[in-house]
Image: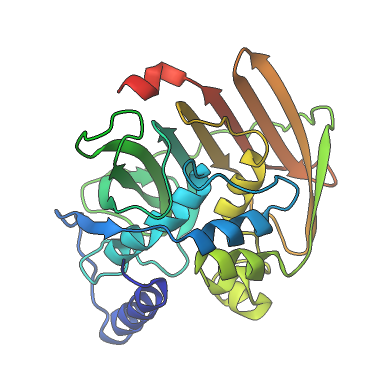
Length: 301
C-alpha cells in the first residue's frame, strides 16, 4: 500500500511546481486504476481503531467497521490524487460526501485486493468535483474455497475549489435553505487533540486537522475535524454487525477543533437510522448521515 506521507509530499511538490512554472493541470482524469494486491489489515490497527472510539467495546477482527476499511484503502486513492496528471490539486481539496455499500464482512489478517479509481469529473458552483471509488475484494467467509468477491465499496466526493475544466458550464449556486434545528438527542465535545488522535490511527496527517496556522494557510478558519472521524463517530454503536448494509454522510460545514457538535438521531423506518449534526449555536448544519440495513440486497450482489 502506498504510504500516505509520500503522497502528501508528492502533492505538495507538484503544487509548488505548478505555482513556480505556472503549469496548467490536465483537463481530464487519468484513465488508470491503482490496484494493491495481498493487502492485509493488521490486528493492531483494529485495536487502535477501537481505542479511538471508546465505549463501543472490542471489535471483531472478522467483521471490521466500515470506516476502518476506508482507512485501509484510503492510501490507494491518495496515491492517484497526488500524481501530476490528476486534474485537481490535492492541497486544499474539500471533502463533500461519502457513500458506502458494505456487502460482506471484511476481515483483518487476511490478504485483500484494494483498487482505487477516479470517475465523474463534474462542474460545481465553487469549482470542480471528482468521485474517488475504492473497492475491496477478498474471501467470502460464508463460502469456503470460493474466489475473491466484492466485500466493500466506497465513493468519496471531493471539491477542487476554483478549478474549472474547459468546456464545462459553471452551474448556478443553489438557493440556501434556512436550517431548521431538530430536537437534540446527543452532543459531542471534540478537544483540539481530535485530529491528532485520528491521524495516529489512520496515518492521515493532513495539516488542516493538526495545526491552526497551517489550516488557515489552506483556506480554513482554524483546525477542523477529519470528515471520516465524524463518519466513524456517527457509525460507532449504530453500524449493523455482519455487513449487508449501506451508509452515507454529506458534509455541509466544517467542524472546528476544539468544538462541540449537536445531533439529532432518528429511526424513520425498520433498519434505518438518520443523523443530523449542527453547531452548538444552532445556526448551521455540519453534516447529515443515513445508515440502512440490508439496503438494496447488498449481501446478494
